[in-house]
Length: 258
Image (cartoon, rainbow, N blue to C red; front, side, top):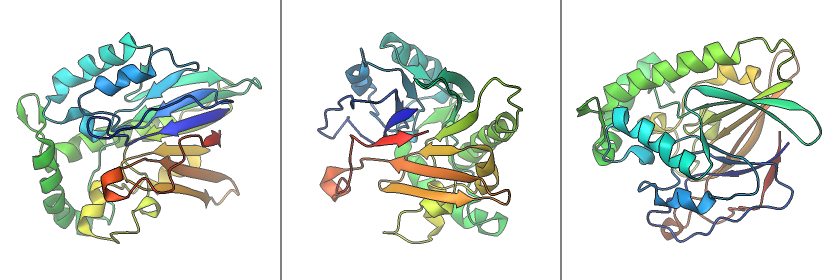
């Protein structure tokens, strides 16, 4: 299956017109498309199915308990399919059946292990203040993000481990937050704040042939080899902010083989 992947478009402030790529069979939006949600309308009538995984900025200034059903309805209005702790099997043109497993997969601040958690939580507190979100009326602070992240992690682990029993041939994971420190932005190095962008989900990688993510404003494309000889390709096609020079090298026409 040929997949067009876009994330971190930040259409609430950036000038970018997404266009369908010839040959694509699926468009994946891996989060931070538009914090105002208005930009999702641009994908209405897209010529191929569109799968959406929300990013952290989709919840800026919102309460998660209210925002989730509202975002799902908003996406549905334009024919887009939102995945949050949900999976969907789609058929490619060649007849292959692929399972797409999607979740924001918030950061659990354990990217550097339990020993680095407290420093990572303190660093993450800044991002949550900027986000100004709530959950059930309470501040969506770093501790609340961690609890949400652990629920996402548990769901991903259980779902990816499910036997296919002939229902699909391979699995594609879609998360907004990165699954590995291998995806860390080289501009900043291994800082405590890196744990606000990357998780340590390396042990889950063997159960997906492809893992798509966003969040870091840089492009990533690497393969991880596993003990049984299989490989997982990890990709991010984040656009980032033009004002910060992050769009250099961004190719919205890139197609990914799944």
